[in-house]
Image (cartoon, rainbow, N blue to C red):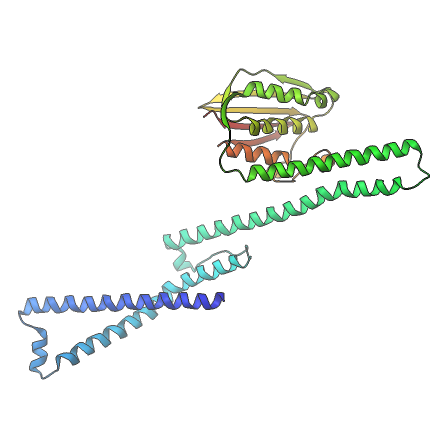
Amino acid sequence: MVEKKDTKTRFAITFLLSVILFFSFSLIILVVYILFRTILGQNLLSIYNDQKLDTKFLITIVIISCIILSYAFTLLVSKFLMVPINRVIDGMEQLASGNYNERLKFKTLINKNPIFLDISDSFNKMASELENTETLNNDFINNFSHEFKTPIVSIQGFAKLMKKNELSREQQLEYLGIIEEESERLSKMAANVMNLMKIENLTILPSVKKFNISEQIRKCILLLEQKWTAKNIEIQVDIEEFYLIGNEELIKQIWINLFDNAIKFTPEKGLIKTEIEKKNNFLNVSITNTGSEIPPEAQKHIFNKFYQADESHSSEGSGIGLAVVKKVTTLHGGEVCVKSADKITTFTVKLPQK
């Protein structure tokens, strides 16, 4: 079906080119005729009539000559013009069939043309983006399956052990506790996925209003007090009062996820520091924690769904939090970045005040 459609397209282009050339040659002959008539001061056809040539016959010869010239030039142009066009069509068909490794590369002579150079660059960028998207989708499915399978397998395993009568009361309580923790983890993970899907489907921010972002950050830290006090982490919050226009509930998820992530990777008696700086109608909120470091190669994927740089902490999270941070920040027209070196990691969120 694709080949049939492709053949029709190429035939249509060739036919259109032939028609254009035919009229072009006809126009050229007409112009030449008018010029000669103007210069000689007489009708060229009268010259031929003097030579007993029929006018209709002469016109027929001219038309046939135009058709032959048009066809000849069409074949000639097709060799140089249709080859790169056919190459682009073939490349698009490869992408449509799912081959995202396809790249355009014209011959050296054509590739020097700025137009074809732009076409090949744009095509290759598009193919590269599609390939990256496909890779991310595959990684998401694999990680999603793995993250959900782990607690389910754990619950099934300990539930089977609970069926054995020889277990002591302490062992039963221990296994029940594990089943309860894994069930809560699974429930939280499902809720986070649903929340992420809801946020990803947003294109327009609802319930936009002005609020005190400094007060919001302090409240988020208090919400997580139980977690950071359990690890004796020092919290430094020395910020002035700043206001922001946006969706208060969505932005709250940024701070909850970033602080939760910082607490997760900060060791006992570590430090978490928060700062807010205003630059050109933008607020730069930075959250820094000590004791952890994200490898450079992992920083490129840290905001991907279900990606976790440190697999040893996989049981403590789902790899969704930073994806939520990225999406909410983007929805507000902002940016988020991470810097990590020398056992210090800093996430910086840049949000426009208006």
